Amino acid sequence: MSGEVGLARRRPRSTTEYEQTLQQVAVDTARLVALADQLLALEQGLQPGGTCDLTEVAGDVLARLQGADRPLVSDLHEPVSIALGSVEAGQLVTNLVTNALV
Image 1 (cartoon, one colour):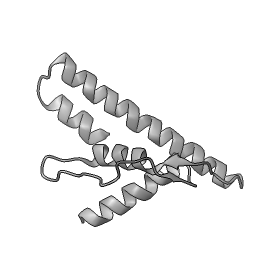
Image 2 (tube, helix red, strand yellow):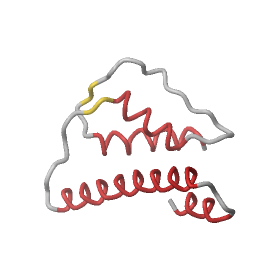
Image 3 (tube, one colour):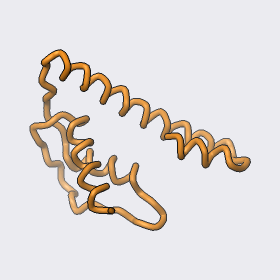
Image 4 (cartoon, one colour):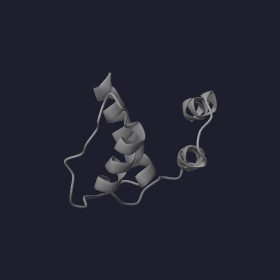
């Protein structure tokens, strides 16, 4: 988030560009809030769970990690339901992709 804000502040931008940056910051903030809630639940001994669509989660993660120097695409085209909450699945896919890029 701080990188996105820093880039946005480097030079004057259009209103649309600022709105896009703010939208991405809002998405990242929501993800961090969900992560904090998950960590609090784990501390209290509650088990996170649920199901989610891996195709959707992977698409969101790849869009967030996308860079001009590294186009990221997924081969998942049909919904794939997994027995894992979307926050946990997002962390898992993020870790796998970022590790693969190193």
